[in-house]
Length: 382
Ligand code: NAD
Ligand code: MG
Image (cartoon, rainbow, N blue to C red; front, side):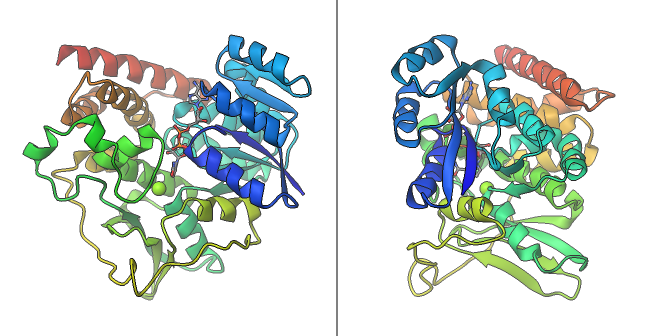
């Protein structure tokens, strides 16, 4: 029986993770759950999974839940999240959205816990801090992102063999094939309609700008210790090949499956075993009969180009890219800026960035804070 701490239990990944726990009660139990503002759902989850600890974003929500659930200890805010990350367990599942996931990942590793990592922003901003720390503490970082889970699976059994390149697949999002003129006019409602995946709002907008793929290039760079030059993005609209690895002899190994996040989540939870499920594989005579591939158009989707530039520049450039992007996505969703303003402002901020010297947790958080302030200020100038 594995005890899980689930950070971000009310989100898209969080609720799918709990689906897996629900179907595999003999294998998993939940020790801690955390949420942002969806307190009603958290309350139902406490009822169902009886964790020892539950965490909300706000103090008043924690106080209200404490009255309803006397057997669960309630905490709140950033300190509550850190306490959850450090609490006794067999694995921390980090399904938080955004940079707020970094400090909990850091603390989970410091406490010696294996981490199933959905929170890609942890590695985008903190890869150079987190990867050596995980090695030093002897903890496993298991990718939940479907592409990275695929790459991880392709590399298994190939330790020490020379990798020529990583083939990172992308659906292309809702605006695949759009021109710049068309992109200039897209609305938040259109951007929120992803063709293949149902996900949280932030990652859905990142998929529409293709920043999600940019963040994933950086995530892959750190997880698999490959330079960005060896990562190639393939637009694959069917989302059946979840990514692949090309080895030095020209052989390519890929991982296929239906687009269902429960598959990579299960893989991370059960590693090194696999959890049995009733879900079928891809339908090769139906939805998966034709698998197609295209080169991404980085002149139209410039966020992808910016992400490659940020990771090549290294240091704190990806921190700026990530933090500013979070703010700009919020502003776009609120109708305050247009779709293309996201990349325009990111381009300006990266050009102006003076890299910070240190890269410990406090340094990264400080650069992130400044990037957010700068992004808001630039947005006001539009
Ligand atoms: P989501 O927005 O659906 O859920 C985010 C979770 O974080 C929720 O539980 C929310 O309550 C919590 N949260 C929000 N604000 C908070 C705050 N202030 N304090 C504490 N908690 C707060 O996001 P998601 O789509 O589940 O994505 C989570 C992570 O997984 C992201 O890093 C995303 O890039 C990654 N990911 C998601 C998918 C997917 O299919 N959804 C796929 C691959 C990777
Ligand atoms: Mg992904």
